[in-house]
Amino acid sequence: MDKFVIRGGTPLRGTIRISGAKNSALPCMAAAILTEDEVTLENIPDVRDIETERKLLASMGAEVELGYGRAHHRTRIRCASLDPVAKYEIVKTMRASSLVLGPLVARTGMARVAMPGGCAIGGRPIDLHIKALQAMGAEITQEHGYLEARAKRLHGAHIVFDKITVTGTEDLLMAAALADGETCMENCACEPEVTDLAKMLTSMGAQIEGAGTATIRVQGAERLHGAKHRIHPDRIEAGTFLIAAAITGGELTLTSCNPEHLSSVIEKLREVGVQCELGPDSIRVHNGGLLRSANISTEEYPGFPTDMQAQFMALATQAEGTSLVTENIFENRFMHVQELIRMGANIRVEGRIAAVVGKSPLSSAAVMASDLRASASLVLAALVAEGETIIDRVYHIDRGYERIEEKLRGVGAKIRRIGNVFRETEEPAAEVTA
Ligand code: UD1
Image (cartoon, rainbow, N blue to C red; front, side):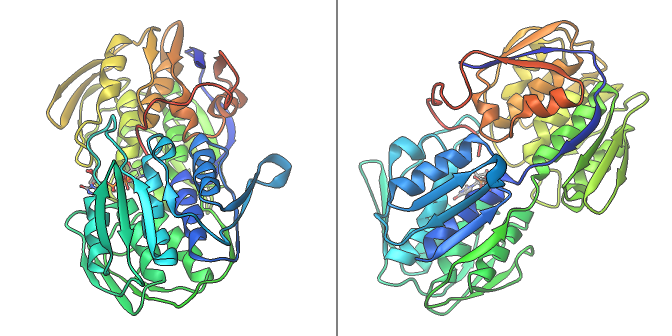
């Protein structure tokens, strides 16, 4: 099992290029199911979840070519014919696999998708996907751990999501693109990843209005065609590096990012005392002084992202005063707390609220990554901890961050990977965050 060994105490300085967004790339790859033509996606991040999605599509009979480096992080996908079954062996390692449900039933009239079991950050059901597909005429049954959806052709419907769901909105957007008639979806997720998917679907011939707002209207098409689409920058990767600069008292310039997508994070960083200068596609972040406490409360976009909560908490341990961190999206997303406490943090959790009292000197410890974003918070804490921190189970971080240790080393961090080689090691036993 790979581990990171991190020696803290070096302020980070330099430039980091932000990769493409994993959470955009995953639905955009699933959208390739909607056409028998070839789809090309650029700026695909080199992370484990993308490899899992490649495997998933290939296991259903898709031709998937995925190339990095000189191949410019590009994937070409052709779903000429499909066996519409998403196997448990793959679904269990990545909950976002449920994104194939809508497009499969829309394209082939049938989908068999393994139910994605429990996960470390809460129950994470897919009942809202199911209910909406039923409203579009799908018959859904559940047997032997698989969900089976059938519909000769999905029809347009008026869908009101009971709760805002990102992948639910994306799943139904894809289904509606090939349905018969108009679908109106209300209480949709407004996340930039939904907008990116809508852009890709539009270039495939779909007619979509309102993506990025709570109400989306889709005129279903008989057929969609191939397209080329460039995945937008990863706002969570960028946010994580903003905090890396802030927590180490350093100065970083992030390039190829979209500052607009990070407004709520940047606002909080400024409140804490960190300076951020925004360019059209870059951010310069600088922390030369004392950090002040600030409260955050996770919300749907454009609110403070739950995917940045753990990283902000690491920063709050280094701020003077008490910061209250409220997690509203997931029921069990404080697993990083115990590990941060082992490194010397002063944090008390009551229900959905964590009170972080700073500033606490952190010291190295052997800690364990428990999910994708929790692992990122441990890396951040280790960058300021005294001594050498060893983070175990870094396969969690490899799921969503492209070569994080290389990027951090490039700006002065003392971080190395030990253990077996990335990608040839163990598969995680169960999925954790998407
Ligand atoms: C996506 C992101 C993940 C992020 C999350 C919230 C991807 C691949 N993953 O996850 O990184 O943390 O959005 O921004 O894009 N819910 C239901 N029933 C459903 C679906 C969701 O009750 O059918 C609940 C969930 O349990 C959760 C809330 O709705 O409490 C939001 O979940 P959702 O937006 O669906 O998260 P994901 O799309 O899985």
